[in-house]
Length: 116
Length: 123
Image (cartoon, rainbow over the protein chains, first blue to last red):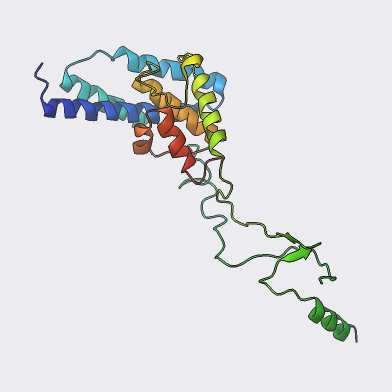
């Protein structure tokens, strides 16, 4: 397994990307569950410890299994009402105030009648 | 009688839609944008300042090494997981929602500033 072939490196790189995306989603989920920062910070540290504990695993099959297990745990723990930024799809302000068509303006003259 | 008077007054004071008001020969632009989508774009210097502040306040980072060209993993010696944490902190700072694939590619201060600068909703 020490042959650094292109397919092996490509597979490792894909695994690393999966791990990063999984960590990102798990961190956001932790923030959804623990809304206040003083509760979120210890939980985020615990999550980081879980990832750090498996840092030096080298066997590619074990890594695949661990990533699958991690993703299963993430899917189980997903928050039912996650915080989504208002303008993003799924947020609260989507399509609320669409941009008006071009060329339409409101002249704010406040009822002034002495326009020269 | 009152309605005739009113309509004659209105006929004199009706402002056509295309002109703007002029007050003392200076153009008074009395038009307000009605959309809630980011019409206010951030100044690039402000973006750089805020991004650097976020990176400097990261506990594993030495603040004196942070410059606008710094690469998170090569120059600051951070981890890929630390990279993820920094991108999340930037999302919090600018009230953005960055898709996962894009967030994975943000690797350095330069890329972060460029992404935020080109994002229409950066707050």
